[in-house]
Image (cartoon, rainbow, N blue to C red):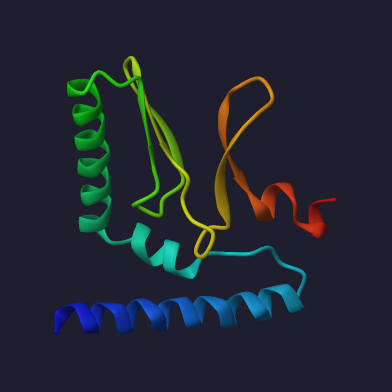
Length: 121
């Protein structure tokens, strides 16, 4: 039951975010993630994300990997933990982000509104 309530709440937040961005586009403003903003204000979410990132790095070290590429948590980020790097592509729905590899082999996060938006051309 709690899962259904959470799913309904998330769907409502995404719907509200879409409406806000329709208005923002009408006024020539860039995309803004309402759901991302709400998540960033909730302390437990930030603690969960931090714990998740550290857990993934710890598991990667145990398995002798050189880094982590992840998309489970919708927070786009490239974070260094000593000799390990954690990459999270974010998501296309809330943040309009993706993880790409450059011609030189570097992984980077691209944000549609910052790099490809017609307003920024």
